[in-house]
Length: 330
Image (tube, rainbow, N blue to C red; front, side, top):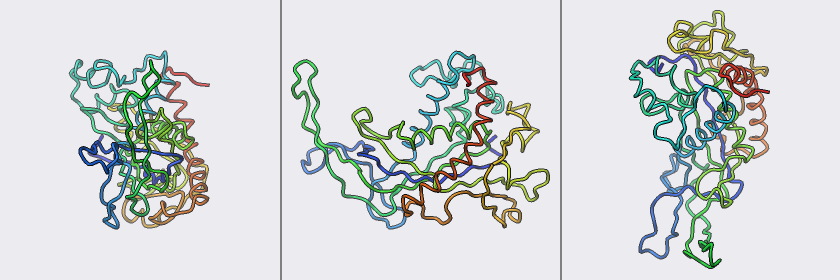
């Protein structure tokens, strides 16, 4: 289901350190004593071109996927629905598909675990994308922390001292995309983002040593339906539609939830008036404009609450999916 697009969910996030964070570059200081032992990853700022730290999209996607897998393992514990074990070479979708010699993409989707249906795996591309997160203005100078490794037997210094760069300030803006989604997948993503925003999930290096806590704000949300010039039987400004409701001809092949995969927003959004002309009806929630990382914290908090209120509507389809899979529900 990659040659055809029926729905898209776009989220703009702002991530702010709630304490020291470090995304290691992998480049050691070497023989230069003036450089920290552990450096923050850097690149050129997309707007100013100046050297800056940033949060790689691959790191953000890894955090979101790993916590989503944790949620799935928790909710589906004891059920017959299998979720990939990242620590096993055999208990994963890639090995199972290889053993069963499944090459048809529709059959692959049906056979994959819920995590791989959303985030992809070695033989089937992801439906979820995460962009790099950049600060509003370039940040190149960072404070440095000194550390040592303690010998557990003697209580003395085992290794060190060594130092690391940490980011303490800055608002980093990024974008997430989920397309051809079922509503339970939106619910899973909403749960993962909620836990990151609540400080339950940390980002980057040395998370067990106090680093990596962030504040996450949902600044903008847009839901689009490519290829729809007319509404027909669909109320795009009032209802969120999953792929099963929009492509009933694919239900049998891909095993989507069903034609009733839809839920009311419960809140009023901004409908793009030109969407019908371009064949792309779109409804937006949250902030307007293209610079959410430049907004004040109270403004971001208000937008975050609005969008989380919209995403709360997907908890019903998420719960129904877990129940259908034989998982734990309350």
